[in-house]
Amino acid sequence: MDLGREWLSVADICDYMAVSTFVVTRLLRSGDLPGIKMGREWRVAAADFEDWLNDERSRSTTRRAPGH
Image 1 (cartoon, rainbow, N blue to C red):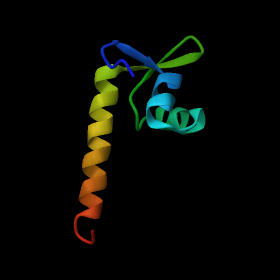
Image 2 (image 1 turned 180 degrees about the vertical axis):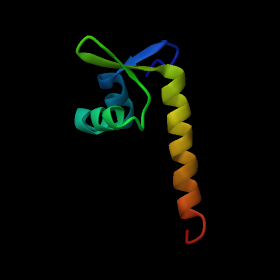
Image 3 (image 1 turned 60 degrees about the vertical axis):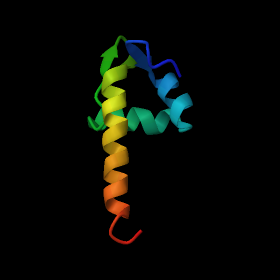
């Protein structure tokens, strides 16, 4: 995925993460993944997506650390 772009679509994120549109849309609607709605479509700033992804990695590592 070209993270050099300023805005990512739901499809871009789905392709990158290999998940369904349902998963990404649910994250956006809940506010867990920051995004904005442009017309009928969601857009996520590439920088926000990178920050969110890094936070998720950190949380995942933290959860696994005690018990491995």
